[in-house]
Amino acid sequence: QVQLVESGGGVVQPGKSLRLSCAASGFTFSTFGVFWIRQAPGKGLEWVAVISFDGNNKYYGDSVKGRFTVSRDDSKNTLFLQMSSLRPEDTAVYYCAKGGTDSYFDSWGQGTLVTVSS
Amino acid sequence: EIVMTQSPATLSVSPGERATLSCRASQSVSSKLAWYQQKPGQAPRLLIYGTSTRATGIPARFSGSGSGTEFTLTIDSLQSEDFAVYYCQQYNNWYTFGQGTKLEIK
Image 1: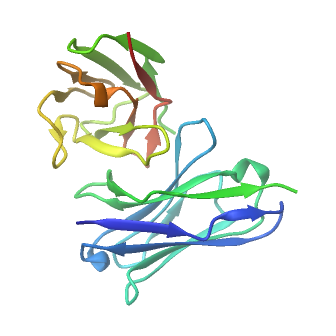
Image 2: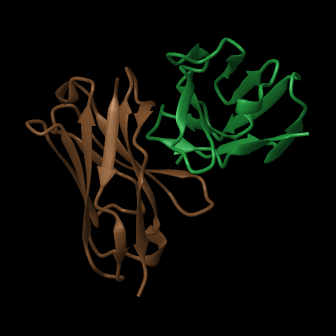
């Protein structure tokens, strides 16, 4: 079955950087687009980034554009999110999700918490 | 950006009854509408995509309908495990979510 496991979260100071990882298994990783979605404490869901199946297309939500970079390593079935210039408002649980046959999110990881605080 | 608005914010329903959740888009999203269920401390789970197609393993008591800008998630014969927060999401023009409807036990 599909499994997505995020890691790399933690407490980081404003202005610093952090890299999240998402290890995928149970499906042919290289044939699917994959997403990052976040959820601030007690709040709703916000799409962060997407990378196409071949890695050639990357798109970002307005709130993270220019600060976050999504990438993938198909040899390791792993998705990454490099986050820089972090702000307190970036504090959230970050989920990775597998794209379905269209751009809905058909499988989710358990999430990793990022806290941006001095 | 397409804004998704869900109503009501909280819905109180008794077990065994029907729940009807609404989602409105600020502009047409065609049929590119999904619904997710989220329980406390858990990741969201896909219920419905393409407005009305149930995801793998989702019980038949969950159904979706609508088109354009108005969508509905209906849950028949509510079970105890159905009480959760539900989000709609459009994927016609990038990806945006509604703010959620909390379905609670009456």
